[in-house]
Structures are given as C-alpha cells and as structure tokens.
Amino acid sequence: MNRTKTFVGALVGLALAGTANAQPVKLEGTIVRGQGGVVLGVVERVTYRENGAPAQVLVRPKGPAGAGPRSLSYGALRKEGGDLSAPLTQAEFNAMPAVNVEPK
Image (tube, rainbow, N blue to C red):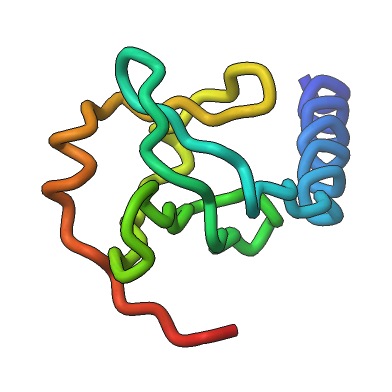
C-alpha cells in the first residue's frame, strides 16, 4: 500500500510539473464561429489561468468597428480546424453585453 501511494504521488507530481510550465495557447486573431458556421468575430484578447491554460476570450464582433468585444468562456469553445466554435447563434452572441476593455 505504501508503495502504491508513493507511485501515485509521483505521477501526480509529474502531471502538476507539466502544467506549471505550460505555454499559453496562441488564440488572438482566431475566428470564432457560431451555430451553422456563421462567423461571430475574432479573438481579440485572452485571459489565462495560473497554469497557463486559457480561461476567457474576448471576441470582437464581425461588423461595425464600434461594437465592443464579448467575453466567452474558453471551456465552452471547441477547436474546429483553425477556428473556434461557440454554442451560440448570431442573435444570442449579438445580445450579449459588450465588455469594457482597457488598451494593452
């Protein structure tokens, strides 16, 4: 039993060490599509967790330049080819409130 605990502890330690040095995923500029493949917008900014995993993405809507970005949970998005897919219709995305973002 003690040997099993040591082995499991070592595996957990290796797994955590791997995530601690994870490189942030490059998502800025990625197209975000909604249901039916319609383009919702482009990823403008990403916030990351402490372990380097993406947490939230700010998506600048396709269309007028004055429209502010919408915040989407990265966990709700799926990779499809080089794009991201969101489980939203165009109307649902447009109805989301814009997020105020300070310039980088």
